[in-house]
Length: 245
Image (cartoon, rainbow, N blue to C red):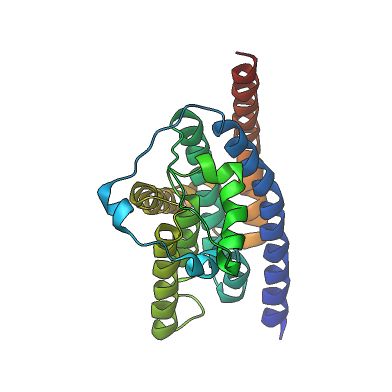
């Protein structure tokens, strides 16, 4: 009974953590995208991208990325792995933000009709992040990080296989709704693989392995907060100087 209460408390704690991460990440991602959309961009569209059909109805599968973080809260048993995922999430974002500012990528979006899916998609197309925060695709990076974290935890082998199918469908949907290019998707998957492996290596050196995951989370935050704040300050200065020029 005591173990179950501890698990419940930990799940409640990390639910608050992931909601807080959402609140911090959204304005940061949008701000970088808004600035990057004002910079000269590159077009990495290939003949493969041009031959992928436009299927706007897949936007509903694409939106599954925003549900996965909340779903993962129900699937996690090893909260230290959750911490490791958050560490990789942070590293991936900091890396992507630099690339978005140094090498913004954009491409021509298709003309939209009047269906519900296309009208919903038009909202996404009009966002500055859609115009510049493309390479690498953080949408793809996120879903693969969630999969790496959840695989082998609460679900059985069949559940893990079904989740993998969902991750692959979400990844492919980014191409069929013309939000990302093949290069964006490939870079997004590679970024997830590298940052998750790096975070898995780094995590034991940052926390006391014998402590509770919630306490370990605090240890990570304290060790990273200075570096992250310096990085954010650097980005703000770069964007501010860029606007003056």
